[in-house]
Structure formats: C-alpha cells, structure tokens
Image 1 (cartoon, rainbow, N blue to C red):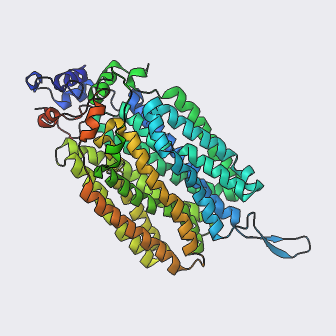
Image 2 (cartoon, rainbow, N blue to C red):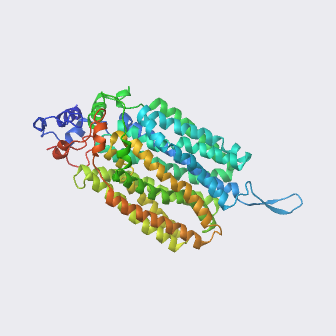
Image 3 (spheres, rainbow, N blue to C red):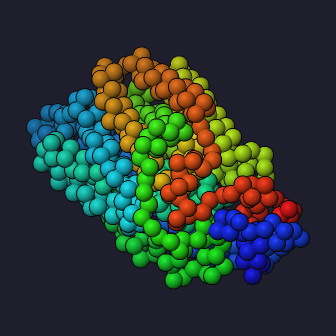
Length: 514
C-alpha cells in the first residue's frame, strides 16, 4: 500500500533517527489518497469508529448531566389544580427555594471534582477505554434511580447526584489516554474535538427533549429515558472499542502501522512514572488550568442556569426553555468540527506553529466570549440576549482546540493526568457558579442576572491573558525522560522535513513531502 510506503519512508515518530536521504521525495499525498480508496468509509477505519463511539459517549456524559437543569423547572413549577369543590389551588412537587435549587444543581460537582486526578491516573495505568465505559455506565444506572431518590428526600437526591459526579468525573481525563493510543499526531485536534462535540450534541438533544418528556410524561421520565440510553452505550463501547490499535482484531495492517508509526511503537510497555513536581510547577500546565477554569465558569453558569434564566427573566414557557437553551450548544457542537479541522489544517500547511494554533484559537475565542457575554447582560431582551449567548458559547468551540488538546502537545504520556489536574480546578465553577447565581438572583430581577453575566465576562478575560502569556506547544523537557520508553514524539527531523498527515490531505492538489 502507498500509505505504508510513505510511512516507512518518512520514519514518522517511530524511526526518528532514519536518514532523511531515504525519503522518497517524489511520492505525493494525492497519490496516497488515490491508493487509499476507502478513506471516506469511516466505519472501515477503526480510529474513526473510536471517535464515533467517543462522540456518543460524551453525548451521554452531558445528557445525563444537563437533564436535571430542565427537569428541575418542572419539579419546582407551581401548577394550578382545580379541586372537586371548584377551588383552584397551586401545587408543586418540590418546594425548593432558589438557594436549594442551586445546591441541587451544584451537588453533582462535589463528587465530580474528587475523581479528576484519579480518572487520569487510572486511564494511564489500566486503559482509558475501560475507565471511560465504567464512568458513564454507572452514572447512567444512578440516573435511573434519581426519581426514587428525589421522592425520598432532598438529601437522598443530593447523595445520588454526588455519587454520579464521582463516576462521571473520570471520563474527561481518561479519554486522553484513549487519544494517546489512537490519535496520530496530525489528527489530534480533529479526533479530540469531534469526540468532545458529543458534549454539545448531548446538550442540544437533552435540553429540548427533557422539556418535552417532562410535559408529556412527567419529570421522572427524563431520568428513565436518558439513563437507559447511557447503559446501552456502555455495553456497546465495551464490545467495540479496544485499548489501542495493537489490541484491535478488526483493524487493517495499513491503519495499524500508520497509527503506531505516528505515535511511536509501543513495544516496551513500561510503567509510566509521572513527574509530579515538574507537572505541578510547569507554567504551561497552569496556563491550561487557568484557561479550562475560565471556559468552564461561563459554560457551567449557562448550562445549569439558562433554563431558569429564560423562564424567570425572559418569561419563556417550560416547553420552550429547553429548545431555546439548546441553541447555543448546537452552535458549539457544529463549530467544534470546524475548529479541529482548521487547527490541524493550519499546522499541516505550515501557516501556524502548534503554540500559535493553541494561543490564537484559545485567546481569540475568549475575547469574543467576553464581548458577547457583556452584550447579553446589557441587552436582556429575548432575541438579543439569546443571540449573544449563542455566539459566546459557539466561539468556545475554538478554545477547545487550544487548552483541551494542549496536554497532548506538552506530554503525551502524562496528558490524562494533566487533564485530570486541569479538570479538577475547572470543576470548581460547577460548584461555585450555581450557588453564587442562586444567591445573587434571589429576587429574579434583570439587574441581578446582569451581575451573573458580568462576572463570567471578567473571568473569560483573565483566562485569556494568562493563557496568552504562558501557553506552550512543544514537548516539555520533563516529559521526554518518561515518554521515550513507551511513546515516541515528533522529532526535530520531522519538523525540518515538513512531514504531514498522509491520511488527510487538506488541499485539492497533492502536496509533495520534501
């Protein structure tokens, strides 16, 4: 196969010491694509199947998380009920005030924050695919039990949500262990962002569908429906996805060779020793943490509070709040694929270096989010506010091609641990933001909601400044020592040779490897 010929000639990652004179300069990417006629059949490429399953997995991650944001509106809604004697009275299933509702919405993150680092460690030690399936599967089972817990007591509901957070907390960090085994160097941004786009697809589907289910079948049906889907997915993932290309019995030899040459041959599977001190004192790692924190503050504020905001302040009906709340995440889900493609394309074409891609995409998105969140706070009318929120959330897709992929640039072997540390700090907004919003908006006035949006804008701006200054895009010195035993990385020779991803030509014309 031409693919294998190119891989062997350029010595991607696995043979970084090979003499450049051995490179077959006359072979073009376009010729490779002619030979590889099944590229468009994504199901024939096992790494694309992994991406699809990861997409569906993150679909469940967020559908299991956000359904309560809509369901709680129905759970606490006051309804007019006519008694047999003709008297009209108001009833509600749960008489929770705004502070208690904020506690319910934030309780998930009390457990979520506890397992970020553990998820990264377990993913690197035992295999991210096992940890990923376990986290989502158990969360789905607990979601099915949520109505029972809520009807028992507020405290039982809080306990179930906290335990859900504990199991779902491992999902984001451990998926980087999956990408480290399955994602070729020049497909990292695309594969990661497409997988993570499932978050927003889940949000887009879960929010409006939760509203429809709550009205048609009662709020309990919301948890039964999404919990069942999560269980089915977890079973499918276990049977379909393997730990790496070398463990997959259905992968072609050409694809396996391509992936393993790109990320490095994994013949020596020694225990990875994480340089904790170097990781925790790295300014590049703290830039990721600051950026992740800032993005999640705005995201979690809207994720947990947007349905309530639309109903209380802009007077939307329950059926409509789910649909309107989903619009911003639809925009982000669509733009994530665009973001990942442009990030990889910019690098392959040589227009931007890795650090420039991370910095420009991340900080450009944050500046746009700062501006549009402030506009949303200023306008506070149904059309203008929803439009501004949609643009603000949509631009967040470009930030994900920055901070969320960046750990793979700094230290592939330690990426899951770095994301675990990062997501630990980034979970704090999920705890603090709903509580703070509940306290600030106690009277549900427009002025109080403006404060909530102004706070988010300010945090975006601070995150932008920190990431711009301290962002890095190359393999860090402290990562090289502990990376060489298991994975090889992009070498100086590769950079000089301009090696590109021979599975994805991004030009209409063939590009020669010089």
